[in-house]
Figure 1: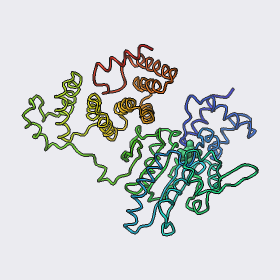
Figure 2: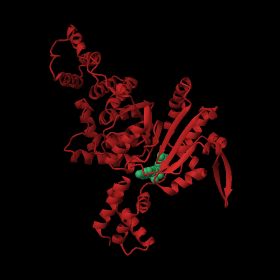
Figure 3: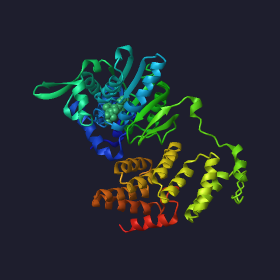
Figure 4: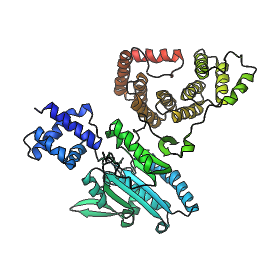
Length: 474
Ligand SMILES: C[S@@+](CC[C@H](N)C(=O)[O-])C[C@H]1O[C@@H](n2cnc3c(N)ncnc32)[C@H](O)[C@@H]1O
């Protein structure tokens, strides 16, 4: 049996040195990994291994890397690379050409075996025919030495190309057979564009402080391993090395909802990324009090709301909620208009309006308004849930799944997340999975004292009752 105290110390050492947190569910894997290392390195036991770890950082990283899968492929997060290729990079290139500043800098953080870094290089090469005029820096970094040396070799198996247009593999790779196994070797002109380095991203001070003036950072599927503190620190370091308007891509299931940061969220279709803005541009539109008298002057307004009261917003929201609930549609439209005229920017307001538009069958407008709510507050569950409902209605199942995943990331205990997962699987005809989720929704409903963990959606009590009744059938 392993000594729990020693295992805890080893766990804490990994956390403090690499920022990598090992989930509770993986406690048994963790114990097995430690035991494997103890016997492989012929230590007497965990205590002796712990002593060794305390003075051997490389071994901490070896142990930790068992828990950070090096899973990757070319063009892995396709919509991000499409966005880079069709929108971000062409604009950046034009801007640089105009200023005669032929310079681009990328970071691929947590690059594993290099597929992400080389994908960036191929895209840049495609968009810049006169590449010799330019200085293009692409740096791929990873904590894992083996991964980095594999990246430097630039030899890949066919499996790594599963997400990529075959045109690319024809254009930028040569087939080679080594000891009977077929590989694809990246062309030397692409290889030359990328440098690799072994770097611990949460090392203090930040090991990449020398790499300033970065235009775009890809750090995909990496922060899932980190604890909150390490994420916050890393994101602030990224902010520091990025240029103004520089962009940070995280993995599909990774958001910055749970930390403080200075990025703003930007969207392209259903994809989002984080943009560093200059201090001026970062300022949110402010509530413009000079517009208040305009609203007061409207004669169809009964003057019941005293617009000078400090709880103005609260009261207006309350009225909107009541109007939606009682289906007083004219009141709804009117109140929404006043709020929008007054430039009151609020996530809650947009969500309520989203539901209202949804009820009117205006699905496109409803989804746009949800996006506005998410832009203001990505952590608000309700607009994501409302988007799921919209996408399910339109049979846009991939989009629905994307929103569901984001919602689950924000609050996995939510009754509605489980309920809509159920609905999603029903659409797919996966009855068993659907039932599992509905049952989980029921469990969550009970353990949450019968409360939906959504603040706003659904506004209508009728809809709330319907959903509740449906869940309780399972
Ligand atoms: C799942 S892979 C992601 C690869 C690639 N970014 C992608 O999305 O395809 C995660 C990588 O993060 C690396 N990693 C984990 N912790 C790290 C740290 N503290 N510093 C640098 N790299 C780290 C792992 O070694 C692993 O190669």
